Amino acid sequence: MKAIRIHAHGDASVLRLEDAEVPRPGHGQALLRIEAVGVNFVEVYQRTGLYQQPLPFTPGSEAAGTVEAVGPGVTLVHPGDRVGSVNVLGAYAEYAVAPAEKLVPLPDRVSTRQAAAVLLQGMTAQYLTTSTYPLRKGDTCLVHAAAGGVGLLLCQMASRVGARVIGTVSTEEKAALAREAGARDVILYTRTDFAAEVRRLMGGRGIQVDYDSVGRTTFEKGLDLLAPRGMMVLFGQSSGPVEPINPQVLNAKGSLYLTRPSLGHYTATRAELLERAGDVLGRVADGSLTVRIDREFPLAQAADAQRALEGRGTAGKLLLVP
Ligand code: NDP
Image (tube, rainbow, N blue to C red; front, side):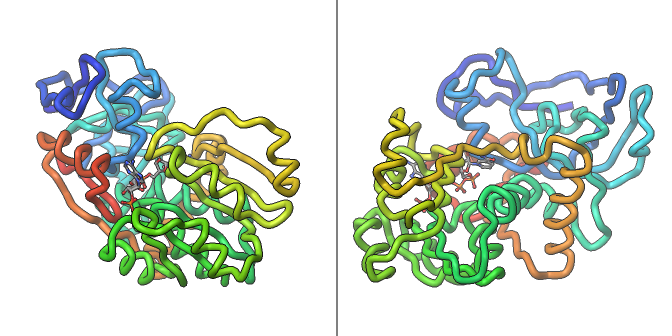
């Protein structure tokens, strides 16, 4: 089979297409024939070495396809089942194994491409809006990178509960997409001081929650926009890591909450995984959640996909098709 391998950290040119053995499913594992791979920003952090991972490795954790074989002790899935997962062990490949308990069955009305496009970012938007800060009608949230993969899904979920969504994006094209996804106001944070603009839009009132995946360039200013007891949800760092923070700052700025959540901790049990995935896939199936697939690349062009993602050239999801 073909698989992408990384032998050294570096720019996207370290992603190499190689021949590899089809893996054998071990105890509790299933072998998947992968039909679509979801590309996520975390794979950029792993490629550059910002997040440590032993070398060499095949990147990727999100994929959907068909169960080809199962290892000893597996009763949850069977060969022929259509499944998706965000815990595939090396998803940038034609075949890969995953723990059977981390596989999610796909409803008939959701294609494998849609599943690979929505599972990780969709469950992220879902836990951020229902569990990390449970949004209510009348709340105002700030969504940075509002036309990104997570961003477009966050805008849809937040606006659906009746929250006011203020989005930030880098281009007019992305602004139009964020508005279509439910953002009432969109700020071009590359041209305008987003903090001053949020204050103007809010008439000086604070916002309840800041969903910040951009990090270095947005975090500090975002803290100043929160209402007393508001929540800063720092869930990514697309522009780079943020500086350490003194807890006293949270007091001075209004008894604020700060959290740095991660999807794994919100899908720790199979019951929670199935509940969140079921919610997201159900919304896709009934048409109430739209996943925008920006582009599909052949597996061999994984480097181009990552270049597009880190170069801010995408709006929505990127897929690799083996
Ligand atoms: P996106 O599609 O959001 O892509 C990143 C976007 O960030 C860009 O399109 C760009 O939007 C914006 N951005 C701002 N500054 C920069 C910069 N200097 N370099 C690159 N991009 C920049 O990616 P994803 O939806 O895959 O992920 C978004 C973030 O959420 C990532 O940081 C990811 O790690 C994190 N994440 C966290 C999870 C969690 O559970 N904690 C789970 C899933 C994702 P614009 O051009 O509009 O500025």
